[in-house]
Image (tube, rainbow, N blue to C red; front, side, top):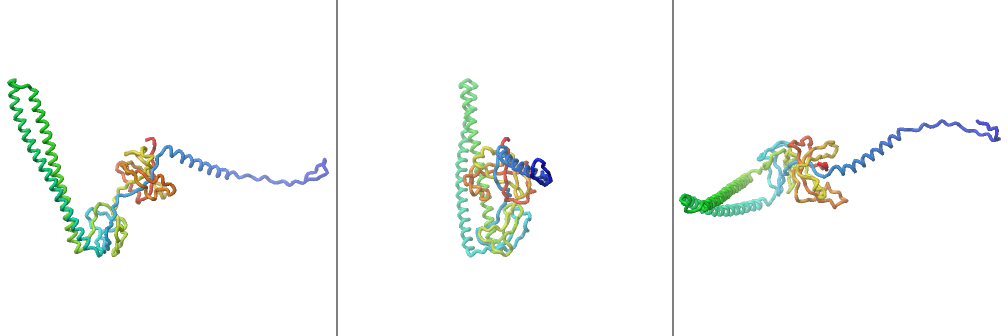
Length: 346
């Protein structure tokens, strides 16, 4: 209580202890501000330093499916097992009332194919015959000029003609010899083409005969490539309907198929090193190089297109592979979206 002797009023003031202010909340606010500023700077600066592209990490795979409904009888391999080209994967039967009709159509198709093959062979043989006739004529002409050269060498020796005339004969022989060699090379190439076509046609016919022989007993599906079997999507005894994927044969070698915006096409070149950021908490960044840039732009995969922006739905497709033949086998999954990043100043 204070008494003011100069005033008749008596005032009473209570003493309050000063409140100590908190300092830790200031640090929280400062940290949030710095995080926002850092994120903004990273977003702005990264667009100056890097070029980006969206893509998918894939594996080379072959999807097993049929154009007719079938029933799986039994699998001869297990899920995830390694198979080689020609290994039997499963036995099946057609679940289709039009099997006989399809067999007739296949037979007619084989007949048409064989007729077309015979016509192609006949056309190539006609070309070979013409080439051989031309080669025979060229050999006669070379022999003539060679005898003419011997005759003119004697005339030059006795100064009846000039050496220039003899040089013209040499040039004629050289030209004819070169032309004869080219014709012989064409004949050899045509014979090689016939041999290759015959081998392919024989293999096709042998396969067709084998299929016809086994179709009356059991039908077996053999692997067309080397790889590992993926999940069996159709169990034993179940029906795989037309175009259903029964399983996939996966090659371990992985690659990235990415889409470059057309405006960034000049920024990517074959052989460029790139970084590949994996999603879904993998917390990994792969390194690779651009193997191929394709000429025709394509519509980006639906999972990569921003639904609100359709102006950039087209992109140029590039293939990215591991550097120096190293694999990305530590990534056990494929068909996942990734972000591709490349330095602008490389």
